[in-house]
Image 1: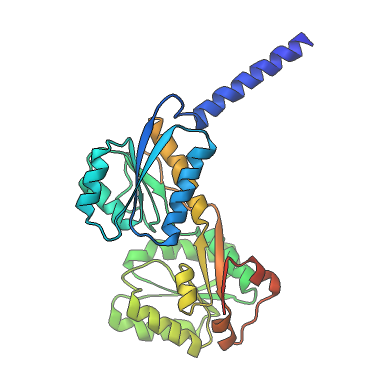
Image 2: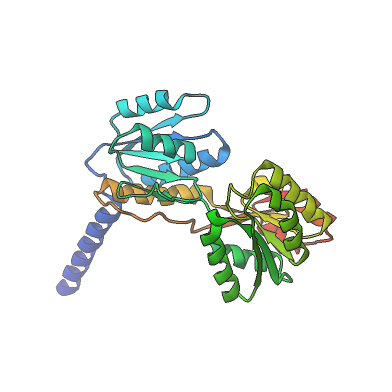
Length: 308
């Protein structure tokens, strides 16, 4: 019995030490984090809420000072941030991240709500990307559109890597990719119509060279004309007329950013950015009806938002 009790005490001590290493990096220290939101949109606030809840749930002693760039000059906001002498900056959105990189010096940065880390990720900067992993997207498309066999996309040199990733995943999951490059705005309409004509659905990928207000409007209009459902990048696309869009779980994305922040505060560097581990999707039933598409109640029930 004594040996058993000794073993249990050792095991408990080990688990406590492990928990301290994983979650208790802030015990006994009063860390300061400056949180900077690029926008006051609800999604940004959800991410920040998830970030804060990660530390609260782990009992960490962290003071998080909140800032917003909405209606404020970046220099003014980051002057206040610098004055707080934070141990870390949490930048939510591209504007906040860009300014954090330019207006602060040497302070570790964790970001969220951006699509591509690109050149911003380094030894001192990492975070949680917004784009849902391709594996989840293709599986989600198969769930919502089980009869779709050919997925259309447009891409440019900016999104060539994304195209390659989607192509490989479609092959793995038994789908065909109907993809064409777009090199200029003047090519968009003809190339789009060519791709839509040979596709069962159309997947939008993050590429500012291909998609902006005029081209998105044309895409949504032509998708209805040709009865090819568009799958967008967020519920904003769905509300505008895409039949379906993927979103990450924004609160959990904030928790992922919190996990990275925890590692940075404990002295770790060179952390690779992560993609969302949870996703959700939205549906536009009015747009679907115009194309003669109906969804099972189970698919509608699982949607995070439904536009009618």
